Every structure is written in structure tokens, then in C-alpha cells.
Image (cartoon, rainbow, N blue to C red; front, top):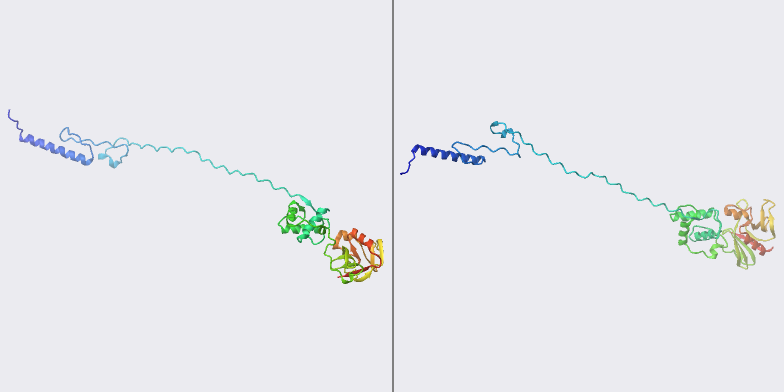
Length: 312
């Protein structure tokens, strides 16, 4: 059989169909659609449905047609629960240590002892006590302790407690026997030239001391006080003309034990007022001695006719 020839019209039809398929394929590539094999001439592939990840707007609907219900995006995942914030506990305060105990009082006003005498001697070494130790803790000793405490930054109580005593011990040395029991409160003055010969009671108003001297040698010394400005003790060279062991003043009706008269009614004698009040008082012109043991020994040695020199 010879070859079948197609008519020229049928060949033109096939060529037109082939061209249409090519146009559709090119259109599909440019629009992003999937190319499908043409089942028949002039058939177009349907558009793909919208993806669930993007919610189309009205402008995206083809031909203005209403699409299916919009897809809802998944709700955000709930935040992972966090542990509740706990407020930091306030710092615990350690209990305050108890205050140190009050220092023990060792000596105070009104005390009398050898320890008080040592206290006075030590205070005198560093210039806080300006007289001889007596062993009695009076107002003068209290003021001296306050002075020391204030200088060292300690409470100015005037009492000698353990802290004050230890501080004083660290600044001073052990007093000698002469420092503990010196003959006089003040240093004995240089004897007047009239006192250098014979047996003399040499009395200095400047140092407020009496020295019993024999041929220029000091046998004993003691503190004395004198009359006031209204009844001054007379100055000069005198002699003892009368001794009276238990004398009582006829003018003032006051005791004058161990009296040794040297000028009218003026005498050297023991004074309990001087022993109690010190230099805050005065005599009526006599020479008062406050150490009874010393004047008792002096009274036993002095004789009538012995010299008395009173000078500044």
C-alpha cells in the first residue's frame, strides 16, 4: 500500500494545535503553574490552591471570587512557666557582743591605805600630785586622778579603777621609801644661815616646813602652816621659853598639844584642824604641825632656851 497522504487541511489543523500547546506551556511557566500534558486542544491547567501558611487578601482572590474559609494561624506557644521570683531573705544580723564589764574600782574618795600612798607617789612622779603622799584618798587625790585620766583619754571619774591603775603602773616606777614617806609635802628649803649653829627649829614660810637642826645637821623635818593675814606669824630669831604638853588656848579655847612657846602667845604645836583640812585653813599666829608623831618626837628633844628662826 502506498503511503497515506493527509490532506493539507488536516495538517494545518495539527500544526495549529501544536502551536496552541506551546503557548499554554509558555504561559504556565511564566505564571508558576505546573505544566500538565494537554488532554485536548484549548484546555488550561487549574490554578493551585492557596497555601495554608499565607492568608490571602481580597486582592489575591482570582476574579474576585470568594475562596474557602481563611486559615487561622496557629496561636503562639505559651511561654514556658518560670519559677516564681522569691524575694531574697534579709541578711541575718549576728547578735551584738555584750558590752565589756565596768572596770573594778580599786580606790576611791574616803579610802585610807598604803596602796593609796603608792598611788599618790606614782602620780607625783609624773606631775599630777603636788604634795607628799598621805595615804588618804581625799578631794586632792581625786582631782589628781581626774587630771591623769583626762590626759590619757580615760573617763574622768576620779576613782582609781583597774584600767586607770594599770595605765599608771605602765608609766611610773615603784616608789622608793623616801617617795612614799617623804618628811615634808614640799621640798625642804635651804636653811637660813642663822640655823647653822646650835640647836634650832628652822622654820621656812616659803617651803612651809620646819627642820629641827643641831649644829647645821637636819635631824627631822615636817610640814607646818602659819597664821592668816589678820593674825600673821611673826618672823625673826626667838628662843623657846615655855613648853606645855596639854595646853589649851585661853584666848580661843582650842587645844594646843605639844606647845612650845617662842613669842608671846605664839607657839609651835600640833593642830588636828591642820591634819584634817590641810592648807585650806590657818592658825591664829602659831606654827601648826599636822603630823602628831613627828611633833611628839620633837617636843621630847627641844629644851627651853633652844633657838627658833622664822623666815621667808
